[in-house]
Length: 230
Image (cartoon, helix red, strand yellow):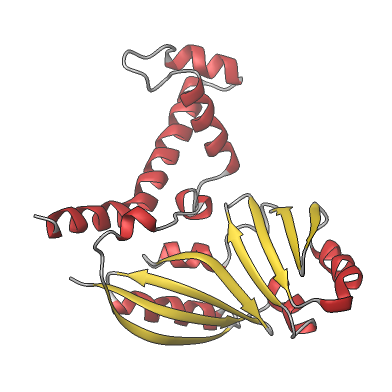
């Protein structure tokens, strides 16, 4: 089964799209870690101060760094703003390479999947949410060496996980719960977190399951790339 790629163009009720529509002359290039966005804005001209005010109203926890002819923005993502379109991609077994480019209210993603129908399901879901979508340049994509250069975002890896599940999983790793042999048992770990052993086990079980499900497309890609090399 060949790996498929496509260009996804989206216009929807998203702060980035809305502010891009207000400043149609700018280009926004965005990298997403799942918890922090790194953004480069080009083409602002004399509107930097007004733009920064408008952007800060949408995203209060924001740092602006002026570069030559560009504006670098770093801002944290709240729980309610996390995911969106990228969560839908994960839901329908699609993923994308960063960065996302936004211009004149339109977001542009290069997306991948193993099945063409996954693209159709993604497009239908975005349209059901009120977004305008166009899918272009669907075709086969070579997988040779792809995994060495691809970017997997934190939002993709942690999709569907609650902040508590992430916290418990990270703490368990930090304490050596998964070491061989383990440096802390379930009862000790649960006690230090102030939760019952059964609650701890449930958090870890759900976190591990979601993490592996999110990794599954990448594992399949690596397997196919390895098989292609033999």
